[in-house]
Image (cartoon, rainbow, N blue to C red; front, side, top):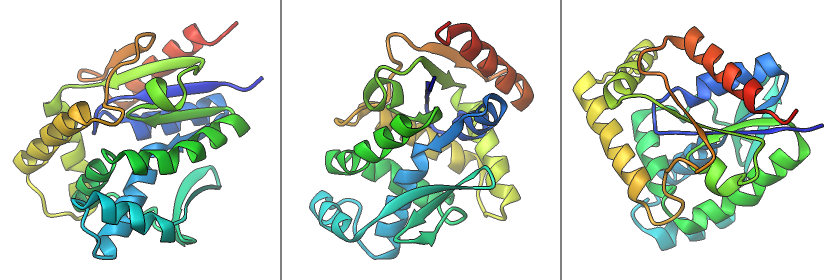
Amino acid sequence: MSYQIAIDGPAGAGKSTIARALAKDLGLIYVDTGALYRAIGYYMYHNGISIDDDAAVIVALDGLRVSLAHVEGEQHVFVNDEDVSNRIRTPQISMAASKISAIPGVRAFLLNLQRDIAAAHSVVMDGRDIGTVILPNADVKIFLTASPESRAERRYKELVEKGESVTLDAVLADMKKRDYDDAHRAAAPLRKADDAVEVDTSALNLEQSIARMKEVVLENLPK
């Protein structure tokens, strides 16, 4: 029997890290949908295409192929057969991804890819609209959240460890802007699905967050 576990939530809530660990624990395939939008943002950014020009972005999609592959259990993201997994986590690409994710044509471009992956495998899939749009009939839906301050601090530490030159104030400002943009976009805005279980990790460390998520999944999987 295959399962679909949908995890939604705001930027920096730890969705990717926690969902990846959860999938490994449960023996499921992890799908980071945010990486798909980052891949498109990366492509636009590095090809000089304005992410503020919706029409130009849609036209540019004709020359773009985005795909996922799992190598030794880790998800890798490819843009036109180029592995960009380690290039799509910068603040610039994060903001580009947030911007282009508001374009309905971009969301439509990725919709079937995401659904096809979920139809072929038992998955833990995370993003902004998984439980509300991509997998509305998922077996378990979780809305993973944390305070903006705790999310910004986590993202700041992550960027510093990667050698990025950033400030905590700047990361917090970006986080709040992304929260607003994600919640107010016309296409599939970020919101908690009516049947989702909310998990707040503000006061939890990584191990506690993973344990809580696993507990919620096991409690809610079809018996």
